[in-house]
Image (tube, rainbow, N blue to C red; front, top):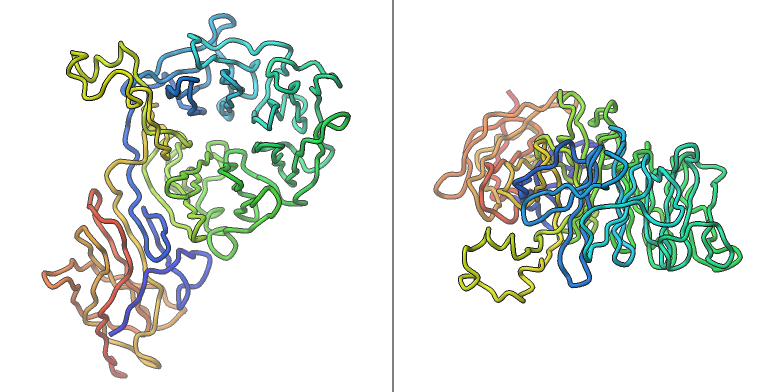
Length: 492
């Protein structure tokens, strides 16, 4: 008898005494894998076209606000319906199919940019529609972040290496001035800008082949730029996502994390770097989006899978930063992912959807339940343009153990093993081969019996177990396999 734990997902390494070849529709925890839930539609009135950006924030009274954009419109979520809150003058927006809206909140203003149009603002405390940001802000910013007391924009048509910032503590002061500290910086090397991450006293500027740190210094320099990485940057614009003092991105050489705005940490080397670049359809690199789920401590990147025949993202690669372990997810076709929130605030009108009588409401009208007691959630849009959260029924899970030689020096006959899962109705398929040059052959899956084991007769020099759990099963942890009964298989 022996215990064989589920292995770390390491598709870039050999399976023998290494990692798992599969960890599908799960995410890692310290000693197990946990189920990954399906994308469950939340909104009932969708956007009118493909989602190209979304953002969650709050009004001054705590009311939740969720915004989204497509190529020509901006929307505000009210209860479960997306309402068009686009500008009233200037016609539809002109975002290209390759662009995404980027959002940031400065004071009461939610500011949105899309790489083409003038920056738009929406007062979250009472506006009905977006309007052009005041002052003389630059047109066509692709990225926006808040860095301390400044609104920072980057990458403009005709100036793809430019960073521009507002006057101090004034989102609508853009005339370059020593007194207001509004200014700009054209970066001379490192390629086009591909992302921004802001923090209290500065931020990070991601480029194709470099990463720079912006630190506030005050007049006359205002922001000092320091190169943090040379030759490594964010190859894919949509791959940049941050949380706390961590920022994640993907370069053509692999996945990296910037820790503490100072240290560049490779997180995909000899794990998933080669797998990812072989698994992504490079025709649709502009459809990549990334987001952080702070509750489960994961960074996820969404992309179109190579050979899938889809033109919409249909795969996720997921990194659990506390353990440094990866997994992958196939949630079906969707449009994008983002860091959302679980609850939208209600108005007196939308409370009608909960009850026909104020007296019959479960909570008093001043309860924070109705202003949106938001719980951060991994969110996305399905291909019907509806907002959804990854909080649906558990997806069908498939996880491999590492490959092992059960009887030292010879072939083995494996007769029984016990799946270590705390729920569901697991099955096990055994993969065998006699030589490392042989392809692995998986026998048919065997369901768990009344004694909690899976029994069969599997001969080979090398064995691995593939555990599967059906979709919509209720379980929390998958540990591995135990009570492995194997004997020498003889030499015939």
